[in-house]
Image 1 (cartoon, rainbow, N blue to C red):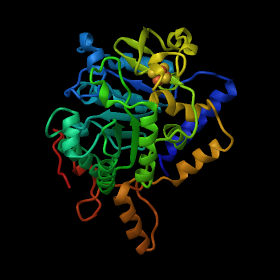
Image 2 (cartoon, rainbow, N blue to C red):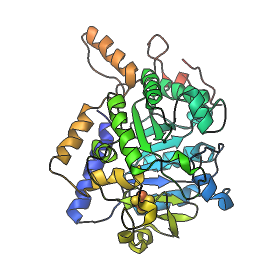
Image 3 (tube, helix red, strand yellow):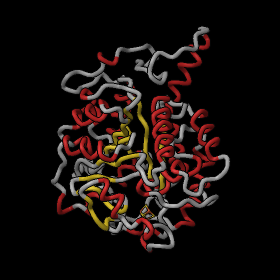
Length: 387
Ligand code: SF4
């Protein structure tokens, strides 16, 4: 499976319910930004620039939960800023999971080891680590040495403790895709469960505009992406990838990935801020959706970013015959767990026992593959026995 079965089942039920009720605009993934502060100053990041004047503001856990309940999205992507510097992150994650939602915790990976002891592995929780290249490239992009190494140590620790981990890579004009293929091969060996990939988009607040791509450049780049990377467990949907390769059109469905932050619901999308709304209902009802998207707003002209178009694959804008089958085949053909899972499966097969013993078949093992109890790996102060 490409995603945990529990997540696929939850999403399917949710979508069927919305369709039966005839709802036109509803969210799939809530982008929850409990704070805007970050420990890094990455070159392509719009957040720390756009919210410079309110960089120290934070949402309370109660505000986060109330917004999540109102919006109702089955998946919550906790981002920011850097969520691992949010003091009450452990409680926030527990409260969200207790309400049956699935979480992607998006991080630069610097504090995974420090905070790992606050969480428990479950099929509803992914660490999502942002990596834009191998060590030299990534450290240049985030403007600090040592970030890549610490993120990798965090990934190893999370995998060793039995967590699901995925990576998230932004493709810029200068990105060397052969390097990304090397990065994926390395992460696959570490047991990383899935890979998200998306083109960079020019935030108004980012001054270094020449790192971003035009539509044509995105298409060229993503034709190569698919050739080089499709053997890995890509978590980017095949329909969105067709759009990125220039093989089909999609309509922007930015309401599918709404963003909530200390200023409110950000409208219309993660990238453009024309208003902040106090409630999700106001965000949906008061945003003039017909004015956004390619050909309607010049700021949207080259936008192919995942928050606008990845939900379109599921929400059915420009739906084609066979899309449902394509999505189902894609889900069933994926495989989480990276190379560790493959070798575990071949060991199990050689002993005539194909049964997994964890939520996704991946489990904590030491460096020669012996199973280890996750509780033994993390001490209360967060220090780890890294395998
Ligand atoms: S096309 Fe892109 S920039 Fe425009 S509203 Fe949609 S997501 Fe936002």
